[in-house]
Image 1 (cartoon, rainbow, N blue to C red):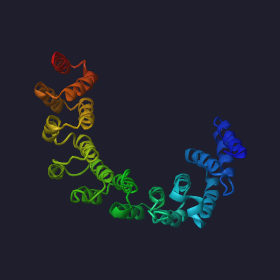
Image 2: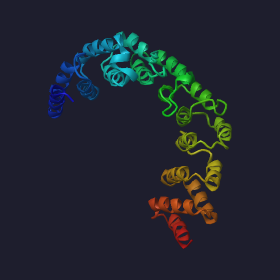
Image 3: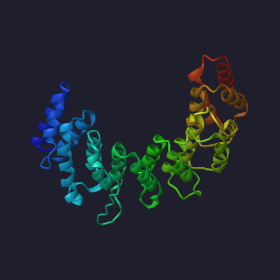
Length: 311
């Protein structure tokens, strides 16, 4: 880091006790001529402490990057926090800028893979601040943009699912969750499932059945988040108990058992405790024992713990 950059960042940090002065300094530092590290530090401050005076410098910086994005911000790592800071002081006049971000696709040599997912994800959230209807339509588009969804994170489609759920728009999420196996991205499928907590309960059994044989742990976590988090209370009790008895995925078993024990749904807890009498898998018994310690004061749990300890 250059000495001047280091000095600017230190000045920002030194003003942590004076938020107004810190924000004012951050506004002054949001200039195209500043080093990347300084810009990142200033954008972090303005995201946490938004001030109206930052809007125009942020817009100028964004325009500067857009002039040569392949040189000034390949991958969108600077535009993402820039958009996060700008949306906090945005006005309806910023809609075209955010619309441009959510429709940005960039490919660079040598691989020419698309690399602007971060920009689209941040642009969508920003657009939602000034035009919810337009943002919802683009969120649905991003869900369907399967060729440009990150294989590991599911972004920007996973973020689009959360936005649609926050607006109470479940249609696209339900459609994605019912795509044929292997078509959708695992992280995005999981995001759609966990955000369907207000789905009518009569639609849950066929959805559960659809994933009854699924072996993808990411998707199954999303499904269990839905079943335990549904607005009408825990759903799919029979499926949950059966899954716990049959699975050999120790990580998923641990996740589910902890969720069950801490969820305080007594009917399912009692059924799980009863089933532990017949559990012979040593790793699952050890996982169950550790999880049950979270409720060791419960007499029924204490009894199950004693049985597990006896082997």
